[in-house]
Length: 292
Image (tube, rainbow, N blue to C red; front, side):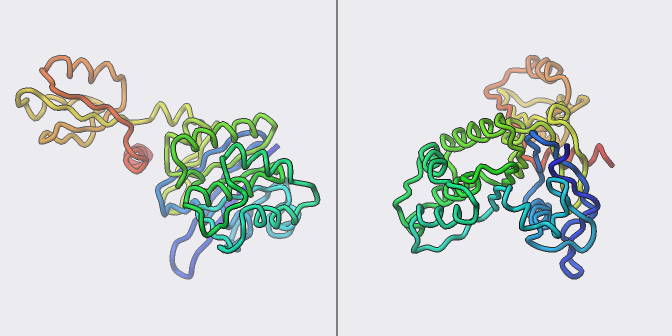
C-alpha cells in the first residue's frame, strides 16, 4: 500500500518557479528520502502535499485520501516537523506540548515524557530560553507524541549536536520498526544514506529520479586531495573516473573502482592524502551530467 501518492504536483508563485510536475510515492513502512540542495523545492513539495499551501495543478493523496478534501482527517495521523520551528516564547515547553496533544483524542502524557527523556529536553523551561537545538527537540517531541502513522521531517537535524543526532536517528529507526512510515527530507547525503530505503532527488523544482539508496551509493563520488613531496605532471591523474581535476592543488572527484586511483597514488611520493564525501551539490552536478 502507498501511504503517499503524488501525481504531477505543481506549485507556481506567480511567474516564479516553485515545483513542477512532481510525482513519486512512499510505500507503507519505509523510510523514504527526499533530497536536494537548499532551494530545490523540498519544503514547497511537503507544504503543498500537506495542503498547507494549495497546488497550481496536480494532486496528492495520503492514506489513499485526497490531501485537500480530507485534510483534517489526514493530519490527525501525521507527525510533521517543518524545517524551521516557531513557538510562543513565553510558554513553557510542557504547556506547549500539552496544547499540541489536546488536538488528538488520546492521552499523550506518557509518550511525551518518554520522548523528552530520550531527547534530553527540559519540559519546565520557557521556549524563549531555549537554544536552536533545544527548539528543534521540542519540534521532534511535538511531531511524535501522538504516535502518528506517518512522520514527515523537513531538515530535522539542523541545530542538533552530533550525539543528539545519533539518538534522534535511533529513535526514528525504532519508530519505523513499529510500522511508522517516514518521509525524511534533507540536503545532507550521509543522513539519507544511513536511514532511507529509497530516495527522490529534486533539483530546481523537478524530480530528477527516484531510486534505491544502494544505487545512489554506487553512483557516489569521492573527493581526493593529494599533497606530493615533489611536483608531478599535470596529466598524471587524467584517468577514467576523475572529474574536476585541479593540478595546482591536486584535488579531484572520482567515481569508479577506487583501486584504480590508489594505484596511481602509490606511484608517487605523497606527504598527505584526504578522501572525503563531496557535498550533495557536487554529487548532483555530476549525476545530472550523466542524466543529460
